[in-house]
Structures are given as C-alpha cells and as structure tokens.
Image 1 (cartoon, rainbow, N blue to C red):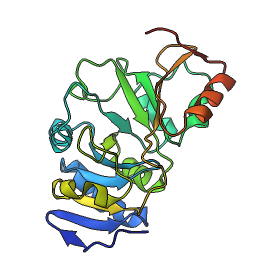
Image 2: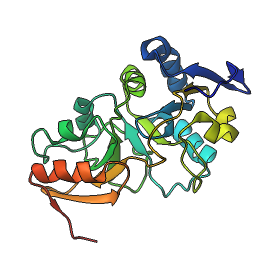
Image 3: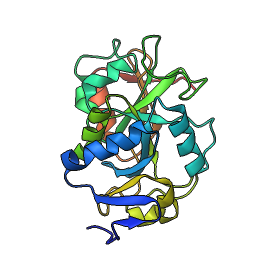
Length: 228
C-alpha cells in the first residue's frame, strides 16, 4: 500500500513504483544529470545514482552522513552485466544465475578490466554487486547503460527504510522518490557474501537470505573461508 503523498513535496517528485517502463526515461535522465533517486528494491528502499559520476556518489555520502571509508555497492540490470564491472571467471558455471536476481550482494574483485571509475570506493579492490529481484529498479539500471551506486535510504546508523515515510527527512535531496508501498523485508537488507576467492565464500552480513544463499553456494561446491 502506498503512503498517500502529494505528487510533489519540496524538491522531490513522487511517482508510484508500478510501471517501470513509463517512469524509467525520467529516472535515467535524472541519473545522467548526476542526481539521486530513491527506489524500492526486493529488500529495502535505496538511494541510487550513476556509479560513474563522482559528483553524484559524493552527494549520496553527504545525504546519508556516511564516511567515505564505507564502500558503496552497485546495482546492474541483469546477471550478464556483472562481468563488465567485476571478475567472474573463477566462479562455478550457473552460480550467479542461481543467486540472482535476489536479496544477495556478491562481493567480487574489480580487476583491471572493470569499467567502473576508480573514484568509486578508492582504496578498495573489490566491489559489491546487486541484481535485485525488483523489475522497477532493473529496468532503470538497464536504461542507464551503466551501473548504479546503491545504498539504503536512511541516515547512516539509523534504521533501514521499508516505506518512503521512513526517510521523509531526506526526500528533499532526491530528484524522484518512487513509492512501492511498504516492503515486507522486516528491515533486513541483502545477504552480503564475498566470492572474490576461488572455491571459497564468506558471509559478510547475514541479511535476509543467509540460509538459502549458503545452500546455493555449497551446492556449487564452494566452502566457507576461515580467513579473517
């Protein structure tokens, strides 16, 4: 159910997160202009921007009050896009397609061939990648032709948002706020798993799909890393 908002409040324009194809063009235009949008995912509401725009990425850090030492994940439209931004050659065939789309963030090495700007997460050799099980944000990501930086729509250290009212104090910083109603995740974000090391996995955050994720990883013969 939607939160019942006026179409425009402050500087943010509100849209229903229903017809992705109707709203994707304006969202993509905003992203290309270096702006931030708020979107529902399959877990929580998130702030998204063009991952290759240093100005936009910095804006997200400012909105959230987040330290630049905390890296941002990226979102892409399809599993097949991941290899443009991270190293996937070492992964068992079919693993990523079994995990994604879904409430999982896979952490992979960026490698030398990544098209990501080095200004994103400087000092980090790995990148967290999401393909949410949410058609709305995936259509926007496809339309952008690049990766979106994606992070939860809240002030750092505050509870995550399952309804746009939860981050009402931050609406003014967004070009668009896309309302998908109340999300059923119970404020649990994605499960974050490090897959950068061949044949190994490490759960970095349990999130909302830990058990299912581990079952898929072990089905593909990966073993849990004991490295600290």
